[in-house]
Length: 509
Image (cartoon, rainbow, N blue to C red):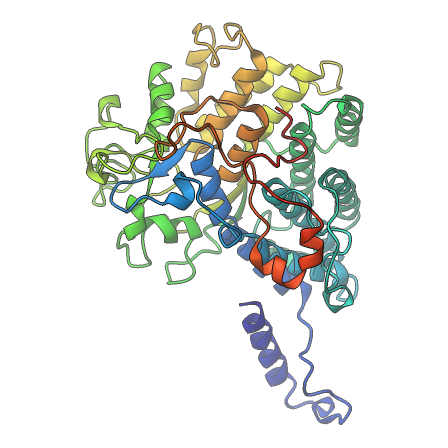
């Protein structure tokens, strides 16, 4: 796809120069394509990121216990019996290909007088590397993205790369503050439309994710607190009251190949016909049991449609009456007895017929508030201005908002005496934060939910029904066979990988 884009750009450049004398310059190398404008590459890179994240987020939604498989299909033993090899879950190649695009922008922005793209490209580079680390552990970083200069990049220690990503985000913020977007090129930014303040807030929010991920590691407290205080001193703040999303109404179109990737995969085609895969992901029984027990029905009805799915004649509503009794979850990994007509599908927070042009969410404001809550609860002396309780309660409010539920309903849990909902009544504050964060990530950030599940071991979700008499669960992916084939010695240098016991550096429990 990347080569196709470059050939199109090359063709346009060729046609546009056909009447110029320089076209006939005998020193022009006909075998060398003209380079692309960083603004074009950046837009395409953002779109590719949203498409690439679909797979990891789906897998993470399963392995964090939020989603399972509908019984209209033969059960996937790869996903639910954990029978996978280095031929499965190759998100590696797509991520590194996408990273090459962002590196191209970073390397060429100055030459094209598009310096305002360097900061956003660095932020995206940091986000993608953080996700790669959370999937695979040690990865090529310092030797990576150098093209033919280094064909067999060495792998860097994951902890060291995590620290390097903080530095990269610091660099990104310097670039963002120094380079205002040229108004003519704001459209190339399909995330924030050239708003460098929001890009800086996104960078700070990613820093919090990276720092809190390490918060259970012995000896990291001083480093984490110092870095959090630096964010506060920097003064730009965090993403609040809105999501970080790619695309949206001005980008996605009701045309095949141009729909929001979630809508296209699990929703409808460009003509409004329901996709067969709409029956594949189902919300878990465990998720529903917890929501119903707490009386959290406002979010329940936004996370899922009632049994039988969406009413296509009245988009955004369910076929059946939307009462709690008509929302049935599916036990994790079950292979029969829970057909699509009798279970709940992905809800209006994610899919509504005709709404093909929603942004693809990269990070929610709710996640950021729960990060701040944990930071303040663990490190009471950090200079964050709010309290752990205020951030926790704001996280629930923001979860209601992004799901499309009435945010006034969030206030019902204050003073409710419900454990893990009411701050004062919650016996373990960190557990309450983790469980509410897990709930809030449902439908939006499966990969992040799985990472947090591995870090906190919360909530305590049931084992897959496909696993009998064992407690094993995946803690990472294998390095893909494509990397073994092209960079074998460096892959082998990582030692024997056991996907059930070779934990990532932040997974200490």
